[in-house]
Image (cartoon, rainbow, N blue to C red; front, side, top):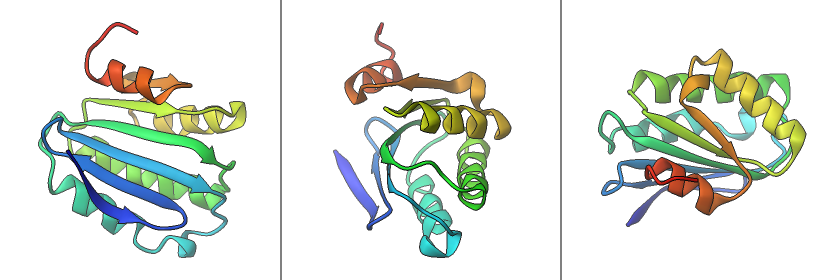
Amino acid sequence: MKQEIAKNDHYEIYIDQVKNRFYIKLIGFWQYASEVPDYIDDHKKALGLLSSGFTVLTDSRTMKTPTTEIMELHGKGLQMLNDAKMSKLALVVDQLIVGFAGKRATREAGVGEQTGQFNDVKEAEDWLDGKDV
């Protein structure tokens, strides 16, 4: 069962301790990191409730193309996930440019090999669950 960690106009973070999964939904356009002052702290809260080997589902279908400052912020979040021993990350996108930004961010954070990119949340969830997709 999902447990809400954070929910605001820019993102939502949930965890599922049974599945050992971190869920994040990125919403709209963020121009400056100051618009999301708790982003990194909310990652820390969620990660404190998960075990090594957890999986991540990032839903960025409603996200707009990030600025350089926001790409750096996402990079810090990805690095935290990697440092906490994430096993797999599913990135759900429906805009080509957001997909390119996601690939760049995951590659730069050193998690490109663990990342799958999808157009559908169910397909992403199935991949994280180890099902053939």
